[in-house]
Length: 315
Image 1 (tube, rainbow, N blue to C red):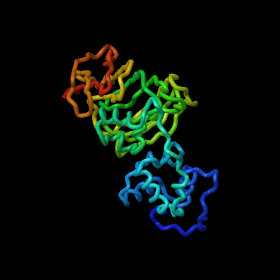
Image 2: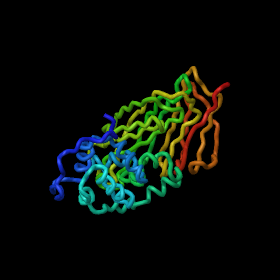
Image 3: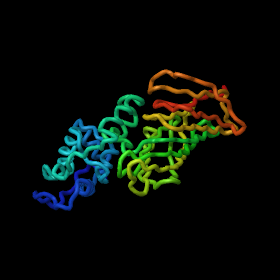
Image 4: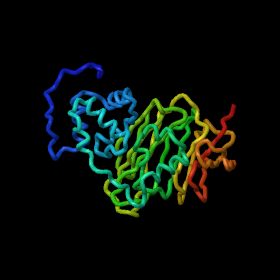
């Protein structure tokens, strides 16, 4: 059935408030299911009213990961009550009070850091919507080691990442990672070795995957944790000429290690740094292939910004 086709009317919903044990997530989830709508269709109907809410945000609301708090989100809630044929005020009444974000990461701090490096309205912000402002606000990254594999067709085929994190507050329980593939991606597969694989959202039209990696328990403030995962890619039709890591904070340690297939070796490679998206490279140093057909960058002082390696292919 096309999801725009009107559904037969169901039983009338009571006008009295939902029972006390109901939560915003449960009532929202139940109403979406009862109406037979996908979250994409819900998002589309909100957009028809000029309300832009991302799929990730709707998914988080439905699973209880977050609740609407901002003015635009509350406007969306009012529209959802109409779309989902709920009595006015049903969802609004279930939204809890505003939850402070804690002293170690005040609201907006991470958003400012993100905008400083990625720029406003970056692809990650478009995908995550309102949740972008709170992206990984409960953890800080200490170290990252990542290994990128380039296949014989000059395309990225996998990224293996090991990351050391520290909880910036009690209750930290997950990391959200966003990866975009310049040469395109037909499919992705994830393998989490340290941590617990959570939701994986692949957006082929944006060549992007959003990965939730759970720690398996709630951390206490200043506790450290290691996550280790690999993203394998069925590449698109493009060709890769560089790989970049965006970091909002200074890292204690960063290693970018790139393996090239023996049948597809670059003529020259350079490691570089950019202060923010769109900025010129502040340094651009040549790096040589080693005996294993790899190049690497290990900046001793890994400042916030964009660290990468670029290469040129033979004619």
